[in-house]
Image 1 (cartoon, helix red, strand yellow):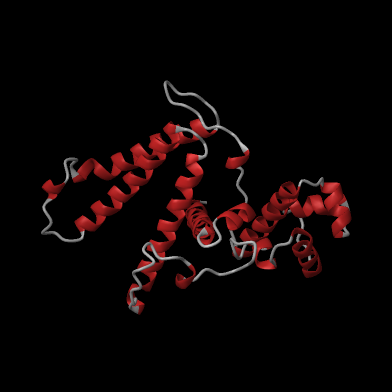
Image 2 (tube, rainbow, N blue to C red; image 1 turned 135 degrees about the horizontal axis):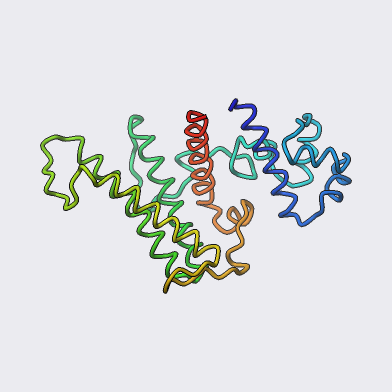
Length: 241
């Protein structure tokens, strides 16, 4: 899939999502944006491409940046995140980062801040099952990555781990698949065995704007994690097509 097509799909998805968040009908939005309902429907379905004038009008109507509308930025303000935008794990520690380590430190801060927000949101579901499965899911990913680093030096003792290398990584994938299935079931209110399910409340309502309002210093992290992960998934999907 071409990059322009991905951008078109992002625009269609985002203007539809914004209209729903605003709580207006397609007809009301079309009237406010100065187009027919049929044309707006085509824009929202990605059937037709709009011009710059409509993008600017939609940006003003929904109170977001053009870059956000076009899927170029995960933040409604259109801001591009930088290393210095994210808070330190320990504000008392201000270390000087060598240029060669900048990507590592940037991703470390991005993931740490995103995980902090994630667990805050998970706690609001009141589901111990989700807490347990999400925690194990992340731990398993860290475990697998740690084993890869361990492999990078042939002198490292394989007896450090109980599970043999030959099966460890396949078992990690299987474990994460099972944990993810359990999480999805809990989130959708499907009770599996003794596992509890998530409670749907106003506290669990999530939008880009609500995240930015509640976590002004760190929302960029989880928004960029979403964007980066989906970009990578789309690359894999396109490679298999």
